[in-house]
Image (cartoon, rainbow, N blue to C red; front, side):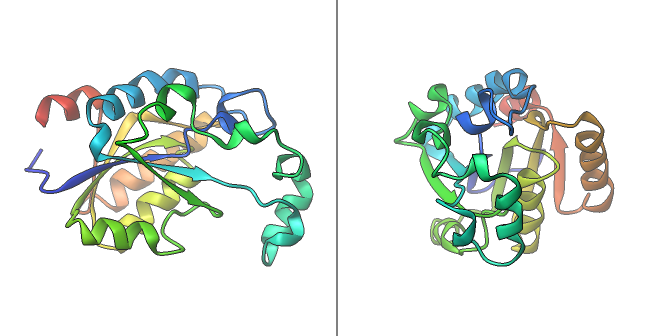
Length: 193
């Protein structure tokens, strides 16, 4: 692994919303959580957590997001207990020095705040963990590549609710983006820094 330069750990949506027994529960988030905790706990000052924040009501969202939240009405903030949008407790205790960026879409890049902050700090490399591999992690990775970041994806520290699409996403990313993306496991990454 080449020198990382100025790097940040971008941890995607490790929230109670997906950890607890909700319709969006990600069964094997509990398997990846210890690895995420290890990276974030060792480098809390370099860790940026994203949180996926549903709208208060479906009508608050544009276009097809309204249909999405009409289907998932029980996952709007009007219906959810407030604590479910928070990071899982073991990660929440790392803030600060870790930071949190909220987002209303799969991608953390849409509003521009995250990229502006990282650019101001001279960040060139993002080490990505979190969930779900085939949705929000995928959006974070592709957006980071588009913005010119070197991306290191921790393959054992990402999770999904669907094994098949998780594996397919890792295969796609590894094959199609091999110049801009590195796939590695958490232990190997931690040994190299």
